[in-house]
Amino acid sequence: MYPWQANNWNTLVTSYKNNRLAHGLLFHGTSGIGKNDFAVEFAHWLLCEQPLAEKACGECKSCLLINAESNPDFIMLSPEETGKAIKVDQVRGLIDKISLTSHGKNQRVIIITPADALNANASNSLLKTLEEPPANTIIILVSDSPSKLMATIRSRTQMIRFDMPVQEQSLAWLQTENVENADLVLKLSAGAPLAAKTMADDEGLQIRDQLFKNWQELANGQADALESAAMWLKDGFKILDNLPLQWVSSWIMDIIRLLQGGHIESMANADYAKTLQNLAGQVDLKSVYGLLDRLNDTIRLTETSANQLMLIEGLLLHWAGLKRTK
Image (cartoon, rainbow, N blue to C red; front, side, top):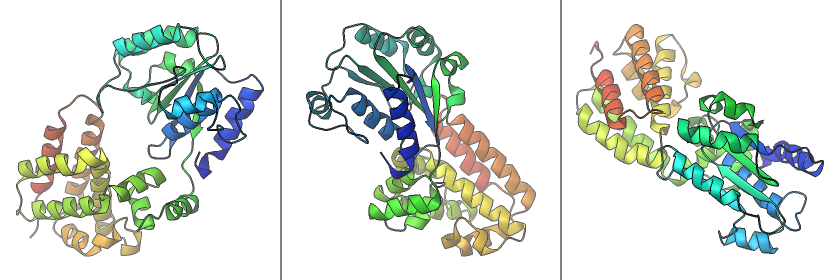
């Protein structure tokens, strides 16, 4: 459990001890704040034979089995491939498993993450189980985007919101994790501390520099948009999911700030200030807003089955093709 999750933990533990915990829970909130880790820790606590106040004991048979990834009463369901849907056959297999008698302390916990990856058939298959769950079974859905879930799924779960930690709390935690450039990576990760740590651990700043250099080269006619898109997908998205698009959003917003008379102090990318000032001097505000619209469409479509490479190509071609004054 992370420091900023204490209230969520206390609320759920109290509900469980008072026999008021719902059989279906939906953990939701911004990406990169630790919802999955919390769900796993809470599942461990629920299954622990001698739980402590804030964590599982780590020593009982159930805990040892969980640590060995062989506890039959703890089931995690995720897409078979990253970024793909959770299929109906996976949900049917889950239902078959939970129809069997539980082991251990007569408790079973299922985590489905990301729950918004459930396709329509899988959602419908899960719905009846949420309506009439087997005894002593708790199903935890984890989602960054609960609005993407079927309304009937949401209505049959207790929604638990996980809030973004305040900046001071995030920075303090990042410092305990020995994360360098904590201020910068936290800002570039929209304030999400786990996303910031992942970015730092996965050489995210170096990748950002690489992509920004290419962004500048495209503006100056020194790079090919189609070749660049392949590089973005391979070196950026493969490691950092869609975070590069959030970086592009911040670059565009900084250019808009500069065109509207904003100061360097207001920029999200102050370390790129000089280059962004040069880029802002080449374009007009209307065309940059058009680019921002294109980016927002791209971000929305990356959450569908659209071809990601073609989406990136289209965005980079749009940027490279903007009319420039010099």
